[in-house]
Image (tube, rainbow, N blue to C red; front, top):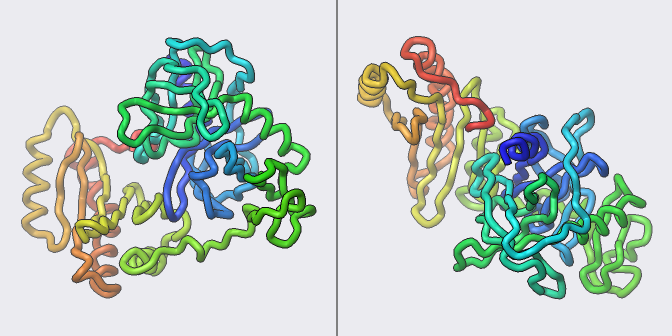
Length: 364
């Protein structure tokens, strides 16, 4: 299985929008990125990031609420390896499978399990039921058999159920891909009422030309439709004022990520607690000399205002915390600027003078 995991690390894509995040995977035969429709719902463009694809915006080419599928444009010049799509796998209950994706934003997570039911009827479609963990962020990732072939697209789980996941069989995906080939490069949607494809050339205003149901092509969605409000909107204004690419910084609802030098800064707004938290993951603790690092961090904590050092699973983290009741553009910008400045400053000191270890991008 390790060879399969290593291969799939190069074709698994993390997808982010202003409202959520999920997983996609690259199919070389079609030169498209496959994901779930609910991952990109309401977006004409999304953020993609992969081991061999630089973080960038890309277009949504195809949406299909009936099968919960979406296809995305692949950046020019991308050179990713090939994985096989198994159209007619001979599945049996008990077969070993693996779900690969980015659950809860954790990159390149593979969970093994077995097929619990080969044909579970849900919403007029037959799904593969598995006990491999399929969690938020896994949506749109591949379900892989023991020989490394894609046999399904991980789509859903039972909210209160333990390891009750469902994957759309690959033969549905193959049909959708082949139907889309005639219109490749165009924005296309499948009408959820009659299942016909609606394109730029045959759409009747806002309606399906075959049955009259209201439809929306991917390019018809506007970025402002997903713009946040309230405190989240103020956070986004600050990110823009700090010279960061706002669209690329989005990592889902109330979550953002920006780069400053060698440091990665994650910003989260928790509406329930009212706290805005910024965490800069600087570097990792070494095996030797940890006492000297702790002593240095404690001394700096004593001197700093509005920022605090901590450690989390060997990572050294520099953070700020602001209660939304006291958050405004002026105070927020001051604190964020300080975090960006100090993050890039401290990680170099910790590595070069105290022997801390750089965090590799794929492990971050």
